[in-house]
Amino acid sequence: MSQRHPAAARPRRPRRLLLTAALLTAGLGLVAAAAPSSAQSTHPHGRPAAGGIVLPAPTGPERLGTVSLHLVDTGRTDPWVPSHPVREIMVQIWYPARHTGGYPAAPWLSPGAVPHFAEALGFPAEMVRATTTHGRVGAPVARKQGGHPVVLYSPGLGGDRGTGTALVEELASHGSVVVTIDHTHDASEVEFPGGRVEVATIPPDLDEQVIAQAVAVRAADTRFVLDQLAALNAGRNPDAGSRRLPDGLRGALDLSRIGMVGHSLGGSTAAAVMHDDPRIKAGVNLDGTLVGAGAVAGSDRPFLLLSSDHGADPEDPSWDAFWANQRGWKRELSLRGSTHASYNDSVVFYPQAAAALGLSPEQVAEQIGTLDPQRSLAIQRTYLRAFLDQHLRHRDGRLLRAPHPRYPEITFVR
Image (cartoon, rainbow, N blue to C red; front, side, top):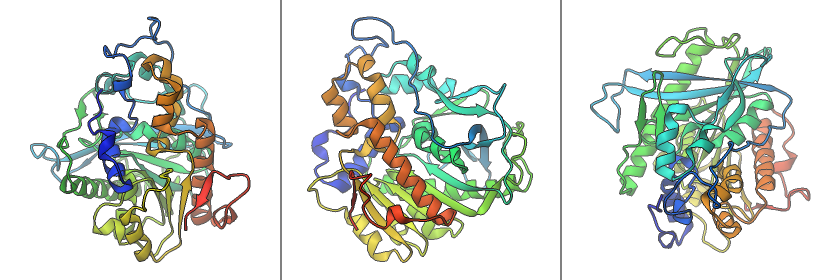
């Protein structure tokens, strides 16, 4: 896969975040320009790529269950494909499970989506297909008095719902129900029940108007998902095919405690939805430029800005505008030695796939930063969990009050 936007076009943080989001098709940005030109699924020495990527185990005590839902919004035509009379999206729910014995491990990417993903990125299809998660499909939901707090996850532009799995699994393992959203025709590929695959149709020549439209579509998707979660929690089955739901899902959500996390354009989506919808009680932007009036307007609820390492680059004007308007709790942190792609599963995939892609250590570092990948992910997990615990569970927030000697890589920007 050749880069759709040259690095030279990203001199400043705002432009970099918008264009890198588009570059990271499917949320990974595994740049085949650095890989063998044939883009075949082989080891540099000619051996077929064997085995999948190993996702790091989540650190929480809960076992994980997962289920995907096909949701249909009959109130909207598809904004990217107007010939589609309804808006269809896929979501995946990750939750603490009572037990997982006998339930299959969920794949990182649904099987029907793998061929397009591999073709689009020049990534070994066998490796993607063999990558599994820690979630067990259909396992019964662990009971909790009053329900579990809920976190929505929106990926970067072009990203599939699974591209933040390492962070999502961490939150679910510590007791949250996490709902990841595929924004159809924005996501690189989305597989629907029956094997139908819908691919991205967003205009390839991105401009501010197209990106603003993408945020508006994503925000509408998110509000629709919130409506469907309320129906689900009340005991109804919102799945378009009425597929069987895991036992115990009814009443398992505490809808008074909903947070939202987004990477790149997903972070802008989180900010925009928080401004418009009081159901979201806390939000996180992982290194995304904030697009549109709603995204920079702020809210009276807590919001965390977590950026990659931009060195001496100027502050993103959209972040400055948001900071001035944000009335609720706010904090901006930066992770030294990280890049934009550090905040999705690239940080896991690149180090393990480097040989298959023919990437040198220097090329890997160019994509995911100089910070050790395991350390990078551990810090992200820690601070993300600390923020959500503080504002959805009312736990101690000392980690977000001031720099901590255990995490010198985190800079308190403001």
